[in-house]
Length: 521
Ligand code: HEM
Image 1: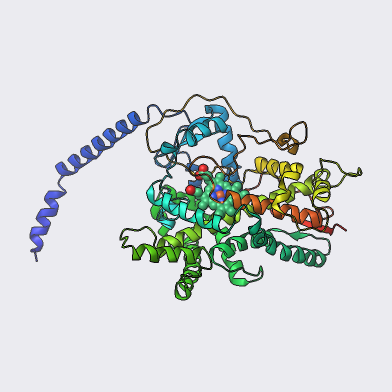
Image 2: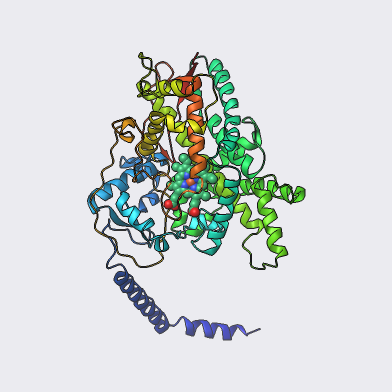
């Protein structure tokens, strides 16, 4: 032990006036050097709005809601983030199709419009296929799995392996249809029951559709389906919804500027950790059960095939293999999150547009008109045959309608951020103006045949293109056709239509709406 007098002597000499001045001068010089270095680095970045110090361009989130209300700004978090999409479009009008923003001190370059996106993601995939470190995501995924994994050999191996398994299940092939159609039978029965019970108030389609969609992922990945009233499964789905909502639509976005906020013991920060813990527990329990009951000769699903691959790699002595149970956990989470919300919201948007455009949903008085979805379905599939992917080529107007709703509603409007792995120059771009009018015919040629438009990229392009594109296309097609074949959808009497700009979570969802259904005899 030092005598107290020695400590006093040391601390008084360390905290002497001269030392404090020297420290301040040192910090000032350090800050100025850092500031000027950063200015030099950022000299050639694309134009953009001026960032706030420290928080960058997202400082608005720091303003407490009562002050926002006082100055007439919305305190509704959904509106605040929804306006992020509007704000980005407005910024493009001011700064052009390539512009800069800052989250904290992190530079983000926004690419707006097909040509510039294609130039980056398709023409320079080696440079633009990485993912940035987003603190919220990094804390929760440890950058494992597929969606947010860094571009490199591990991501490549994992993605190739999972894609191979999905293809093994028969994605894009007729043999996979029953897996999707099975859930639809329940949706139809329940829809009729709930419609009857609602006494004209209409049915919220969202839980039914989300259940049918996530059951497709569940049966491929976990080898089991859940009843839509299964309370544990319902809880899992609502936890996922809530988790995404908090990450994107609440003050928790500030974790991306100050990562330590994640550990705050109150409010949405605490709730986020709780949600994450509950989802982890649910998935880890299922994976553990698979491990205990694994028969490598008879793999039941993706989890079994992955566990089997782990055994193969262990037997081959691959010591640094990335195939681990931990990695599997993040992959399962990714497939759920990437595969449920996106497809569910797309189906909900399509049915909402059908309700709002009964002239496009409906049937003409003429025996067959090519510009009515149900007329086309009646003509090609009829009222009683189960629809199949083989009908796709014969339903151009229906297909064009699905594509047009996808174009207008863009359920992944900001895609998933990419990171460039080199300093890059962007070309000057012509401004891109979105067209907001709903018109499926824009996807048809003069003979009524489907037009493939290169710039229609709801699933992204390049090396990071959506891994579930084939699956999602099958689900959208079969679900929409089956439901429109069976029912006429309309809004309940006297109910105003929901706003069409949607609610932004990780994906763009329609505002909640209810529909009345009538069986098509
Ligand atoms: C209508 C439904 C869907 C839409 C609109 C959609 C759209 C997208 C988009 C825009 C991306 C980002 C591409 C990029 O980074 O440039 C993406 C990535 C991804 N999607 Fe989908 N998706 C849908 C359904 C699905 C389904 C059903 C699955 C499940 C198998 C899935 C799995 C993934 C995965 C794993 C990625 C990450 C790929 C990677 O980083 O390598 N998606 N999706």
